[in-house]
Length: 433
Image (cartoon, rainbow, N blue to C red; front, side, top):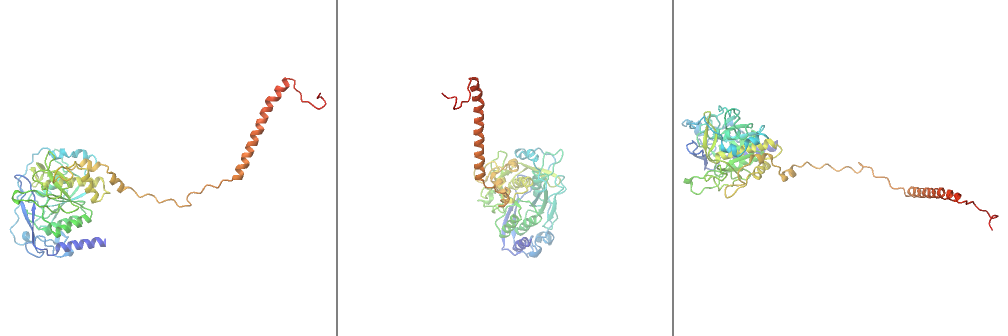
């Protein structure tokens, strides 16, 4: 316990310390016509007025109530809340059919697993997302003003609802919404704090549909979450024509993170999916359907932002079905059971929920085999008594003597009657001539 507290303090101290000024581009692509926009996340001084991730001090940096939003909460213009209009009429998602989710749900629906959604908040008034717990790190309220976080949360764990052809991958998993942006802009320190906060709350899975550049605070936060046995799932990022040559996206590119690229209905990598980021697996990321802010739905969502939550949902199913696996073996199971990739940016290929949940992996069975029982003590079994050679010898001679007597009796019993029939009499010396 003391060691864990020390790690927490060190990580939070690093995050709360004044970092060098850096720009971190974060994108949440939601496809044509949607409200997800390219945003710039700035990591400034921890004490600057514009730093929305100001944590006050290292001792309470992980406490959401002590996190102040500089730009959003110190006299700045109020955040415009316009997630865009959704629809109430949707059809069955191709992704749900492709992943054979009804077959997986016969084995598990993710009950008992907690998934943290580090994003723009979640509309908890949506009938399929009412079980979501909300934490706001922006001081703007828990409302989702982008719609992005609501869509991500719905893909992961939207509850089953009669008459609605859309359900989350793990409909019985618990959701925690940790709001780290309110208008598409934010702070890398606040993003890092959100990941740490998710780990401290005991999240089994942390979904980060955000792409950023490498930063020490973000790296430390991911390291801490992995040390707390959380599976961190992150979007591999989207290619933007105006960006020129794309670079790796973080936190997806960090070691130990389950990085997700986007695929279309044919299973091939979408052209918009960043192939420079190391990709673990692919998941549906084109023409995706999900929940939307305003108690609505959205179709034609596009990008790795919406591929990542499919994998986060699968991880929740695996953790529910195999509670004894740590985060390393859960990530390995998801990768080994994927359908197989081909080409850059495809990783192990399209995620396969049914195999991820049900496959028997020999190496995993060896790793999980119970310890062998301790050997029995030397006196547990009495040794056999030594052979008595003298007794054996006497018994053998007695047996042979009995056999000889028996033979003689048998011969006599045959010979004497035959002799009498032939007039044979025992002779004597006087009768001999």
